[in-house]
Image (tube, rainbow over all chains, first blue to last red; front, side, top):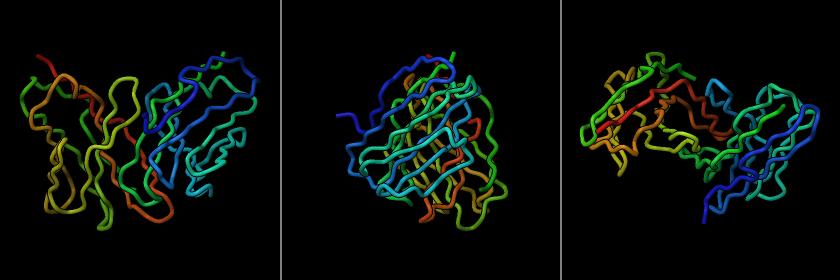
Length: 113
Length: 112
């Protein structure tokens, strides 16, 4: 009964490939997020959706495209992967767009070779 | 968002209180102080938040100075499982989305 789950946990792929990471939350929350944690451990927000509507879109290359088929799911698709995309990607959710508490998933470690 | 400053690392003996400081001297009147922690290889976990008053929950206490320029997170009886990176974040919660900006945090090591 994991609250926020991500698949896969590990992803190793070559430069130039296209890959997707999936996220699901069973908390009934309205808002979901994608964060990226780089090799120096800095954690930065990338996107946020509220009820399938994009509300936060940080300065992220347009190779990254989030998709929210419903409010319980937020997937991240990455085109033409580059070495610099190697990082841990965390999905999170919160009850609504102004909630103080965000619930994070276990992360997906992406390695681009 | 107001910038925060935290010591890079701290040690604490198991069973003792862990007091983690955070400076946020440029905080605005409507900005909240949040604390999250990240245990190795896991996603961040919310701990507590506050605006002006001291707050306490089952995990920790948050003490905010009267001028709100600094705060202290207190884990009253630290255990080995509290070893983690602790992040102090200052942020206005708005309807436009709660965009948390994590700094470098404090690596807390709890030892026997």
